[in-house]
Amino acid sequence: MEQYKLGEMEQRFAEMIWENAPIASGQLAKLCEAAFGWKRTTSYTMLKRLCDRSIFSNENGVVMVIMSKEEFQAAQGEQFINEHFEGSLPQFLLAFSRRKKLGEREITELKKMIEEYEEGK
Image (cartoon, rainbow, N blue to C red; front, side, top):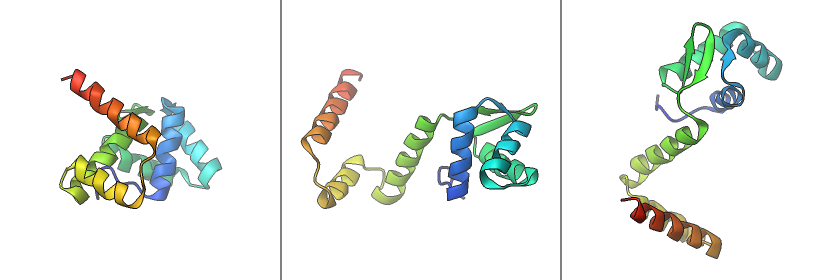
């Protein structure tokens, strides 16, 4: 199992936690029952999986965020580029722009990001 790849229901469950954390695990189970039709045990099994990946924690019955949604998405992107483009962001951008031309706004945003990165060195 890859740390930053989530199945559809894992993703929906994670979204629910990010939207409601910190939240009592019992209350989370009730939300899952209403939203997904899950039994309490299903919610706790899913929570354990995501806690084992260090995305969330469940301390004394309170579910808390370890990795924010933004941090998680960044880690997913990094994992994808590492797996498919040997860790090369330029190779990813080259492959991406072959199929989808970048607009002026996207090019401007990329240039700005590069400039900010260079200034922060």
